[in-house]
Amino acid sequence: MNSPDQPPPAAALPIIRLKSDRAPGHPWVWSAQVHKPQARLPPGSLVEVHDARGGFVGRGFWNGHARIALRLLDIDAAATIDTDWIAARIDRAVRLRRDWLHLEQASDAWRVVHSEGDGLSGLIVDRYADILVIEYFAAGMWRFREAIHAALLAHFPGARLYWFAESHVQKQESFDCRSPDVPAAVEVREHGLRFHAAPGSGHKTGFFADQRDNRRRFAELAKGRRVLDLCCNAGGFAVHAMAAGAREAVGVDLDAGILEVARANAAANRVAATFEQADIFDWVRAALARGERYDAVVLDPAKLTRDRSKVMEALKKYFAMNRMALDIIPPGGLLLTCSCTGLVGESEFLEMLRRVALNAGREIQLLQVGGAGADHPFRTDVPEGRYLKAVFCRID
Image 1 (cartoon, rainbow, N blue to C red):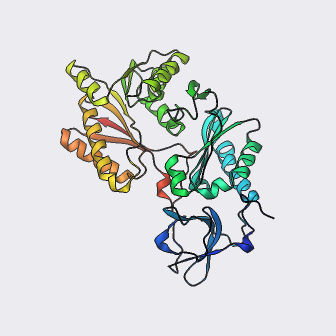
Image 2: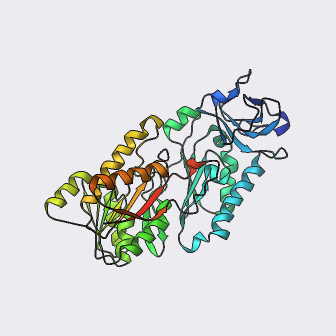
Image 3: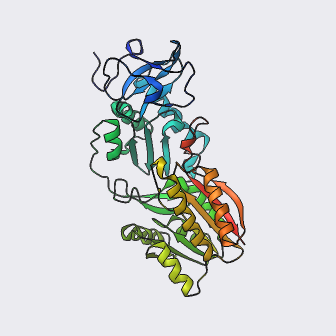
């Protein structure tokens, strides 16, 4: 007999029918695209999906309470979504990072599972040395938690597991995720440098592995320059830049707590980066009044919105921040401007920069448009998985 958290075998799965006779083209299927089942199904139930003609589409999670009613997991009619299936997907994800990308040579902080990018919709796993942080976005994945934890420990024996789900996700998806005690902070390494990571703390982790490659690239370009790290968080860009030979680095953030982490990171790597608590607009205005200029600037604000109706408002904020940043960069300077707002696409972000250049009467020469590291893969049919934009620019 199946336990409540062990879904039934595929032969017994209830059927959800699409309103269209075509496959949805995306693993997320909205409630308006399906015929709701007559019988009530618990949130996160495994179901078989058929098109309007009765043809097999795939298997996935059903949640009649959520905005995403269906999460397609596998389109192979022979596949069974069970603990072995979960283990196989996690094995594939880990082998990509270890055997293909050789991430352990560069860092012990990397994304282990990137939701749809690894075929595990509703699950994100991040590694910080011996800690694995597991974030649940779907009731269906939460029902598989024991299988997920066991599969992860098979690849990371002795790892400490910390799992959570944001409160708004638990409410939308109708599940109750109870997290264990917050693990003690740990030190991680990245390209030979040392950083503090504190999963479960009030500052996310204090370390964002998705910017790993961009930190190193910025440091290479900023050698010999005066660096300004705006919205610096734990100071990763500033520390990397100073370690690579920047002349000076100042980080600015409004969060006093995370700046203590940034200072500890600078001390751990024996670099002389300094960090100041301030609103970035106020700080830049004061610096301009003193006649200051910085010829290598990073602008990496936190996510600005999760609401599609507020994308234009977010773009206006990006415009204001980037327009302000241009004022403190002399001709021939470097700007790395970033957006982790997934709802803002790359084309929209670049159009915003075009308008900034026009407004400022400056030329913005795009050198490179990057994103998250390769441990954050995204599928061609899930552009939302490419949330991070990192645009390297030369300002004239």
